[in-house]
Length: 415
Image (cartoon, rainbow, N blue to C red):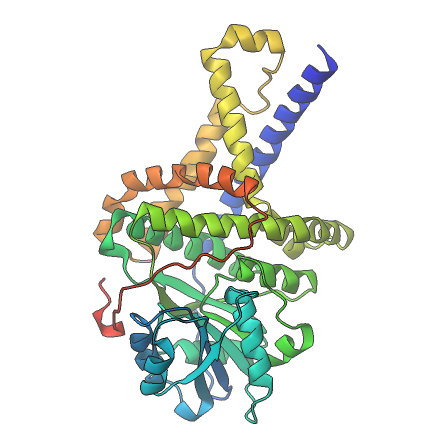
């Protein structure tokens, strides 16, 4: 075998081993999301909150959110609503003020995007006379459960410094795309986030429904300017030994795209930002996890590795398929060793896919979600080309806005 053939053979085997091990690891970790611990601890309202709402041309959806936030089951004097009207060219700010919230208008063509907007708003907050115990972050298309702040109050009193709320879907029944996104979040909330919470691992921030202790923000700053500011801030926290936690009962409803075009655009931005964050934080986190034998840091590093793992799965799948349909040619190349048998991959993939209906059952999804599972398989496959494109465009830092238009009130949410 030539040196090149030996190298290719070894690389192929290594990729199989790595992706196989990580897949099995995720199956094992997910099992700890089956059981939800009953948390009965309650505390009287004590913590004060500055609620940030990031908004760019959100005139169609901002008013229902403001109305929703003003009627939370929490003392009104303990929280204020700050809407960041970021480079708006519509009347978002006017609607916000008429609805009774505080509108802060920001115009900066050089520093565009949610990460920069949040950092700017924090600077404005530090100049206010009133001080707050924590900052809560929502997107303009969101709705929050009435007891959202009550749940966050309990978590903060219990010592949590960074908390991610449950990301529910506001418009699951709009299309098979929005339902596919809803299925993804049933799985993520239950088998990814809750399982890691139960194991004491760091939870991943999801861009909205986030609560961060004010003292921590002043201590480490925001400093998250990538296309996925949530992934970046998570990595910065874990790197410092601060592990975000999970509030399974603190629901925030998020609008999902209705079309493949909009979904593709949004997920491409997510993957571009994820690759960017991985290039800066994966190796430091992995190194620290090994040096300090720290499982939380290792798990966070593996989360950053997910896009690359997806590419490895795609590449190994292509090679295995070509070996099947072109055995003679591949025998000449000597790149034909299979480290893990086909039965292993079948078992792992069956277990991973079976967790979808399991998560849906545990989270009491309606029948439409189950009916969409065959189409969801197609949705999953679209992640492969998105990830490939993201790899070659990961240096793109241009923020792409997701248009929102579902002005739903909390009491109008469909089951």
